[in-house]
Length: 219
Image (tube, rainbow, N blue to C red; front, side):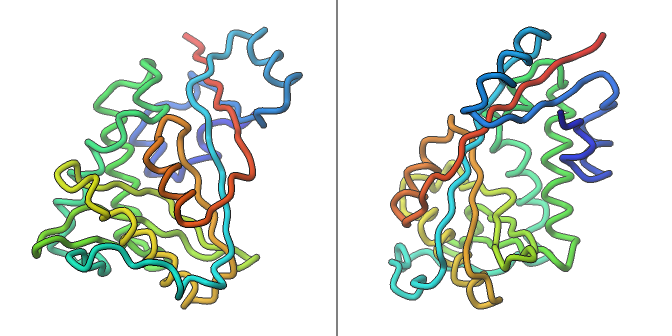
């Protein structure tokens, strides 16, 4: 089992609240025995995590998305917008779904997540721009020891969805990671986020694993 503190950093744990009252278990979707043990001990299934991966060898050949969308790194003047977008873009996540987490604490979690991305020099926040205005974000983690890139948090402004902004943002992020020496990129998304799954498939990502989040509260 994995306790919440192992999954989040100190600021995020503080934002979401006291972790001593709950246990989080993440198991492979094919691990029937572990799933049965979780159910026998009154854990609740709250989400499925989809993990996909692709090589970055051919990113130069990928379509760039609409010409009306430019992508750049976040600037200081974007911070208020990005934090605000983060607190309203992840309502389908397991934190909001689990009613044991107060809504304001979930908002604070995603605020802390975005602020970490903006303040940590080892991370990059990519921002798509439409008609001079920011239209989303993609928080990129540092490369791991295997030279794999990973996006930690991504959202498209609801006013700009369905217009190719996600394609432009993802491809730009892939090229940035490749330019930094990444050999592969890994994505993780909720099975409820069908738009993300379709985008990843369109860009050549292959699903490698599905994991199940189980939550349990002690009160």
